[in-house]
Image 1 (cartoon, rainbow, N blue to C red):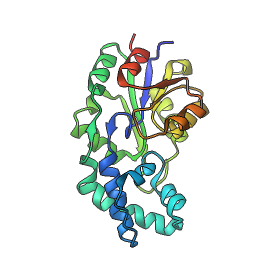
Image 2: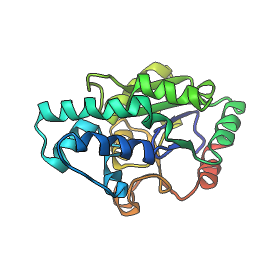
Image 3: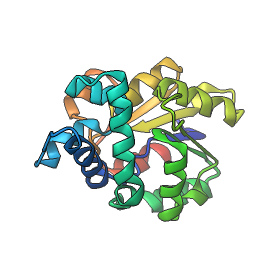
Image 4: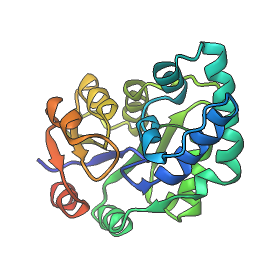
Length: 216
């Protein structure tokens, strides 16, 4: 199966953003007297909507979660979004996909504003036809909704030609609920068992493996 429209998640799929995100979470939690020294303990925040994670892991109310999100953004906008690297091999893959005429897209729960800044910073924005993220007020944060928006904007009506590439369960669920294929990558932040249990179309160990699936 060769795909024409390829939708990428951002964090844990295109870039290794663990340091910046976890330090931003650490900064926000310190505002509440929660001093988390081991950043690995905060990796679980990468992927799902942040307000949901503050509520799930620290039992914050909706109001407190929204406040914590603002503290997160204080650090993230100044430093965190740039404490980040592009995975080795990603730009070469994107370049080859564009040469083959693929429609490349990003669907991420990260706000569109920050997503575009990051893609421009790393000079990746030129490869993407569509970039869809959440709104700054926290709306449009469901991966199912984000993927649906990409499909609609692409104006490509053959769902069998779409594939989502991501590293968390939300990517698999969102793809399935939109009727498209999904490649789950294990080099990101989702546990391998988490991904295997949801039975994606492809379980990918490396960017080289991903290339073999996506390139003609």
